[in-house]
Image 1 (cartoon, one colour):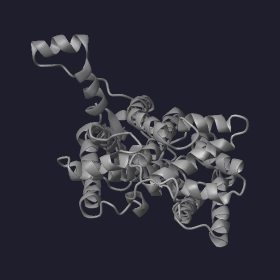
Image 2: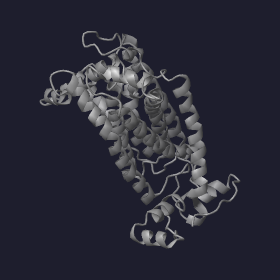
Image 3: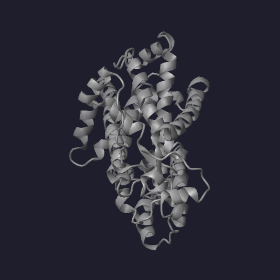
Image 4: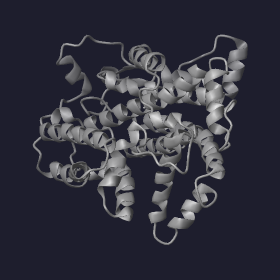
Length: 416
């Protein structure tokens, strides 16, 4: 699907370099003349937003690492030093901490868009699986980053999560000790988490490269879920049509991001994390960051520790099997009226689990979490396989161009 490059450098030096390392030709074919479906909406801008946020997190993280001290007796103080003494340290800290939340907002929008429009179906299975791997790496990176300030919630959050591995039969205790670097959460744990937190974003960038490569091989999905049949009629060139839309979407997203950074920078944090870690004082209510709360609710809903861990990781792993769990040949929810209802119920279930994960444990919240956890797994294991067999879908348009022109959209420049 990648557009063939017609790029020819104007200078002799440029032509010499391009004949030996055609970087500009690659950029031209991938981001200038690359053909994209002409019916893409603003939900497709989150890919560009995520790319921007990844770069922003790496840049701010590198700057913070220059001043951070990964030592258990100094880590908390070094964060305060960054906030108070380093020039614009407060800005980099708030950009990074709130950037993690904005990163997950964008990735959840990206995932739910993929679910709604069936972007995981053939021929995009590998593209989707690479996206799930990126999501798993993001979770690991965010969790380790949450530990680094070495506040109360950082310390006890690390204690709770790393203890989950001890539930694994036979090797669980050894795995926990390896993660800790000893027999408890201490300085060795902090050093390991800092090293991995610094390394994983670059691994994410590598997988993102594969993700974009896979995207350019199979082409983008679109709101109608119809494959490109005629490049000239069904597609437009990436620049300026997609780039302008991405730029506008990114600008709106950055306004929201800036509002959090400059007006409510601590809104998404936990007050307990502004106290130095104390292994002798357990917080009354231990919770992870908001973007992990749905999975935390599933974990707490299961009375057996091992089954809770299995369900926790299974809730994420199920995403990788979506291309085979959904048996319907129709991609887009626009033409699947029953699936559309179940999709919005699923969104409500995820939001409900997130809220329950933030609440203190009680009989009523545990019962509700168990009910919603069942609904979560039922969506993947019962609803999607059966809908493909019994759902009556609406007729699909013959092509992307027919779907667009039926709405009276003006013609756009075709992809070359």
